[in-house]
Image 1 (cartoon, rainbow, N blue to C red):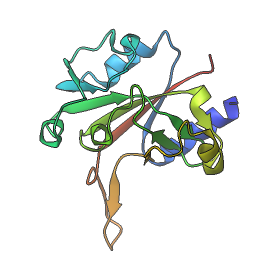
Image 2 (tube, rainbow, N blue to C red):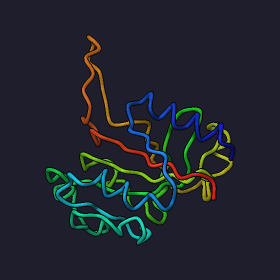
Image 3 (cartoon, rainbow, N blue to C red):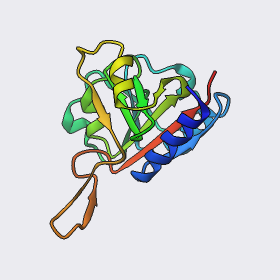
Image 4 (spheres, rainbow, N blue to C red):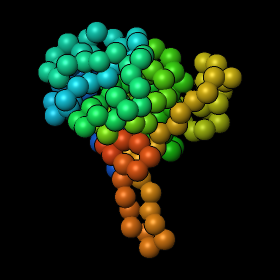
Length: 173
């Protein structure tokens, strides 16, 4: 992974109206607390590193058993990691692994915050396919907050998923 890939990923994710926040590992707990400060509660998938939640103000909920109705509560946010990210398309790739949870967690709450390590960023989709830890697992690909346009190109966000997507980018270790 190169700094150029990180910069391209950040630029492309920003093109999709995702908030992109570079930070160091030392800054991560405070930045996550700031991004999630307005949430009524934060859903955490199994395997979420404890240092990510060290400074969170809102209460946390385990993501393993919540129903779609519970995940649709006003003000709820979800904090995840990812399996990989694609620089060329600004896309997050989740495969249900540690700190990612089940697909429902990233599609229902209004706010999704995802932590991406620089080592997880690949150049393009062919590199993504080669880098998938288990290519037989289902994956969710996210390129920006949920949005759609009608025939007159009026953009509406949050129709099929989170209205707000924040991506926290960590530098190479």
